[in-house]
Length: 258
Ligand SMILES: Nc1ncnc2c1ncn2[C@@H]1O[C@H](COP(=O)(O)OP(=O)(O)OP(=O)(O)O)[C@@H](O)[C@H]1O
Image 1 (cartoon, rainbow, N blue to C red):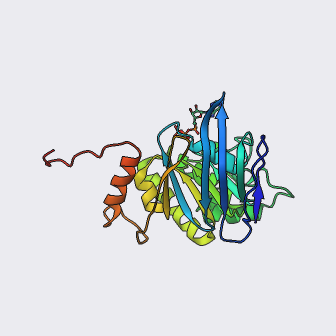
Image 2 (cartoon, rainbow, N blue to C red):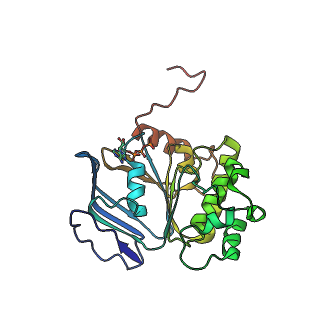
Image 3 (cartoon, rainbow, N blue to C red):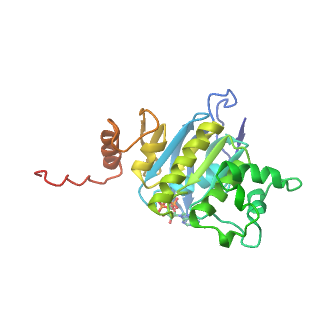
């Protein structure tokens, strides 16, 4: 199931990954820009069906890592093994304005465009009725759902999400988070979600990673029952720990004596 993304400098060999126990295996990954390594001998394993959130301060290399896993950046050293079937959705929905929504969903797929396949994916994200619409007539949330449908139609074993809710208003964002949780539970694919939002990570993920200094510097399982709520027992302790790892001090609650 795994496929190798060769680095420009000959990659080191990885162990067997097609045993079904691993969806992604990254070993000793390095990516430098202008001689400065942004990712520096990073190791990472994702299990099939696992929902993982990737946190980290701005500029730490989260998107760079995601682009490598998506196969969009091959100028790397180290070993990257990922499933062949993978899809990515970015913060900007990246719809082609001159193509109707259903054609956008099928963009880049091989074979004859099958509208019913696109409409199946659009229905899954609650957008079946907008299949024939032009992208400019969609709201921000609808465009983001179309972008998710474009990812789903690829039937990914690995879904890569780069801050897909970042530009949405608070209410639309909550709905989009619920949709992703539903899709993940239905599809059973591994998900790697890049987010700035600790609460979002804890609402959705099985495991949260913190990237720092070019590596995964901290990780924790998120062993909270689903569906989750911010007020759940255990939530606050995990949030506080993750914020500390991100170098953010939690505000002292109003009325508390510092
Ligand atoms: N194509 C590029 N050329 C040069 N530098 C780059 C390139 N892409 C990324 N970088 C640099 O690599 C570092 C990591 O960028 P990246 O976008 O991966 O960070 P990030 O953690 O996703 O940040 P943010 O949370 O702000 O989106 C930054 O310093 C960025 O300027």
